[in-house]
Every structure is written in structure tokens, then in C-alpha cells.
Image (cartoon, rainbow, N blue to C red; front, side, top):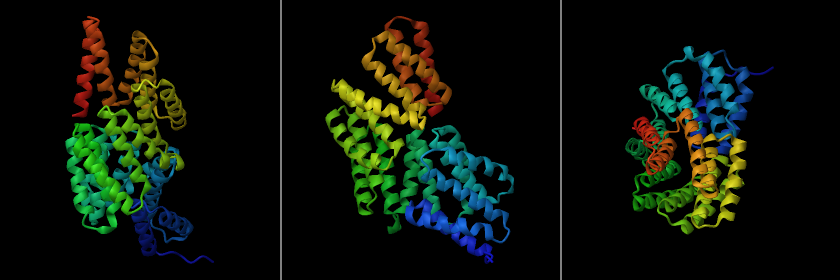
Length: 363
């Protein structure tokens, strides 16, 4: 006969599991998950704890599943019980759903849920959770190109993480995000400073993931500076861990930038090698953003100008539907300039209006 598990014991197990998930302690999180999964069916009846368990399982899947489908099914189940949640559970629901939408690149929707979560953050009396929230919110702002808000929330996070020596890894993540933001601002010296700091913190705790992403960002920074050879050097270094661990989301960005740099160097054979590898991964992950960017990149370097503009128009339509405002702004501006040079004022105005529309969405 199985011994009944008390609510207090299960609460402690779930709280410990969440800390392991949040801190990216993979081995301990998996071990606790196995223990919890075994005990959950022998717990005293407690609907709130079952909801908490479902929410943490959802959060765990967002980190450890290579596809989004597992999380999709759990979110449908959790939505049915949403009305039963207290403030703490409502915070986790809104926060985790924001992360879920961020992973799908639905940045506006993600921000909506993060703002709902922020109203209930006071129900979680844990400063590290506050720091984690600000870091995740800063990440969404960065992708949404609201850079000043991203930097503000990153500093809120890092101020807390730096008070605890156990959170060197999260400090590294924050430094990496600051580096990313300064790349977007064009402050390359400052970006390099933060990215090198991120690498040092990541090496201190032996986190190859954060080290790899920081190297990728250094490669991206050199790409933005027009230093193609140096960009490729850092991107190749970053790719080793990504390929070994099947981290497709990271690989896509790295391979796309590498293809772009080889095209710049007029090494088209090498460029097409990375384009094709990137296509394969995008097909597997259904990454519509980078599929579009690859189509544009390939067309730019292999088609005549008119055919390239046709591809650009098609992809812009897709980016508008999916609310990829940063891409829409960049590529609409390119089309607008083309039509302006062609003295097609009507079409030029159409795409300049799209540029303004995208800028307004990002502000």
C-alpha cells in the first residue's frame, strides 16, 4: 500500500523543483521531476497543488523540450483551470505564458502577459524570482527593440543576482543581454566589454551554453561592424556547443549570420553551404522568421534586382501577418528606397508607411 503524501511535503518538493528549473540545474531538476511524478498520484487532494504541478511541468517542458508541441498541450489543459488560481498561481501562469509566447516570437502578446504577471509579483516573496522576472522581461523588450526598457530591467535583475554568489550564471546572462542591447544601439565598445564579462562569468561556472551564446553575439557584433573575417571566427567557435547539443534555435541565427558574412566576402559557395544547412534546421523547427530571412538573403545574392524585390515583397507580407516588426521595418525601408529610385512614388510611399507602422509598433 502506497503511503499518502502530505500537501506540505509536496509543496516543498515543488518549490525545490522550481528553483532547480529556474537555475537551469538540469540533473537535479530531472531527478526531482521523477520523484514528484511518482508521488503526485498519492498526494492528499489539493487542487491548488495540482495546478502548481501542471504549471511547473509546463515551465520544465519549455526548457527541456526541443519542440513547442508538448507545452502547447499542457497550456490547453491549464487554461481550463485558470479561474481556480490564487495570486501566486496567477503570477506563475502569466509569467510562464509570457515565456511561452516569447519562445514563439509573439513578442507583443508576451509583453501583455508579463505585465499581468508584474502586478502579482509581490505575491512571491523571493528576491531571486523578482530578478528572474526582470531578466525575462528585459529579454522580451530587447527582441521587441525597446532597448532602453530592456537595459533598465536588466540592471534591476543584475543588481539582485550580484548579491548572491550562487547566481554567477544569471549574472553572466544579464551581461550577455546588456551586450546584445549595446550592439543594437551601435555602442560596440560597450557591447564587447559586457560580452567578454559574460564569457568570464560563464567560464567561472562552466556553463558552455552562456559562453557559446556570448561568442555568437561577439560574432554578430563584428558582423554589424563590417568585420566579416572576425565575425566568422567567433561564430564558428560558438557553433560547436550548439551543434553538439542540438540547440537549433541558436544554430539558426549563427548559420544565417555566417552565410551573410561569406556572401560579403564573395565566397558564395561557402555562403550557400550555410544557407542550405540553415534551411534544413528551419524546416525542422518551422522557424518562419529565419526561413523568410534566408529567402531574402539568397535572393539578394543570386537573383537580379527586380526578382529580388519580388521576393522581398512576398516576405514582407508574411512578416506583417506575423508581427515581426523589426524585420518589417528593415526590409520595407529597402523596398521603399528602391521604388523611390525608380521614381514610383506611390509604391515608395506604401512601403515608407509600413516602415512608420513598424516603428510605431516597436515604440
